[in-house]
Image (cartoon, rainbow, N blue to C red; front, side):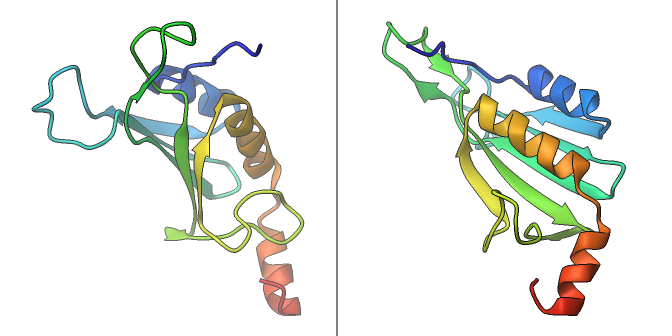
Length: 134
């Protein structure tokens, strides 16, 4: 059985920083039910190619005791921004096709997505716009 991989604000910051992104983050919901925000945390990372990922852990998930203890963050929602606006990726990529957000990503999928966005040449957006594919 696969080991459940939990995500924290700090672990996602480290993932984005390791990929070369400038990172900002903030915590949201705490152990107190009176917390004002409806998310556990959010992290934004801007890559050298100008693309930005906005990663949000919407809420804690509750797991059965044999999976993990108590409340955990094992899924996140990710939005892609280009030039300050929500965007799709050019055709040929497994992410952000026909939508500007990916919901319910686990840690291995997030690692793959970060690598994909980090390596993307932004000129592909212009090329696919010229050819009518984007």
